[in-house]
Image 1 (tube, rainbow, N blue to C red):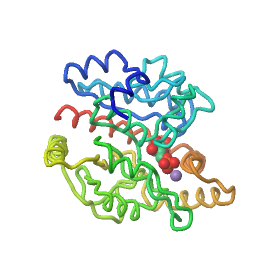
Image 2 (image 1 turned 90 degrees about the vertical axis):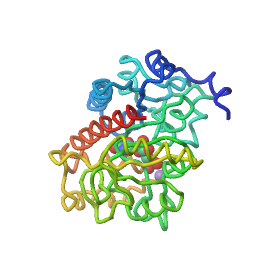
Image 3 (image 1 turned 135 degrees about the horizontal axis):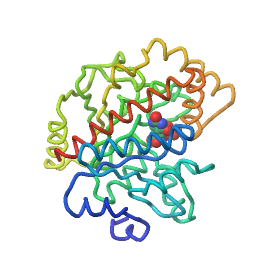
Length: 305
Ligand code: PSU
Ligand code: MN
């Protein structure tokens, strides 16, 4: 698909179009976190706050979603709120993004689908919470997120808090390395584990300034390497849940998923919802804090680019 043939499916929100035309910084945001990752009304509040943070940093936010078969790059506050309230929205990745467009459906875009849309629109920086990765037990379930392949092929910088600790972080790092995806930890020597600042795994690469991340991305493109880059930004210390404490909850959530035979696309939303109950809301509070922190860093990288 060439960007030209894609144009008829895409609505670029006017402030986003103006920023892109003027060469001003834009940060893409995903929407599966809105439709499947958090309950209403926290999802709506989070989506608004994250956009405000990006604006305060001097960049233009572009939340990406599919609404009634239109690929939206940037939403109005009304569209954002309506999406947050939508019941039964699809969860759209590379495999089903075009299905939603062709069938006139509504859905949240995952990291993979948001990267595709961002690249189509000419947006190079994208902020999310956590990426999908290799699930624990993938050696029998084969559950490996399409986000990893997308990082390998689509030229977008994805700012995350690492891979969710519900995943097998070590295997996720192995796959990223195999596919040639740089993993840059921002300001730390170990890979963060989403709700927690630390994991046992050493940072593959470390950079401490947004401008250096922008420069690294530019250099990759200048030497002709295709594909994206993962930035892992540890959750702010004040908001973290220690890894030992999360481990017990994650174990319980995983046992529940196995007992209820949850599979495929339903796994990540199921685990997140179960953790929200088990932590009595603490996991959600941390999730919101880390998305906000990632949005701030993404805006600073976009400004440097
Ligand atoms: N991080 C969150 N909440 C989410 C997700 C990430 O805190 O809902 C979503 C992202 O959209 C990511 C997706 O791309 O989960 C991964 O799903 P899967 O494991 O099915 O590929
Ligand atoms: Mn999966």
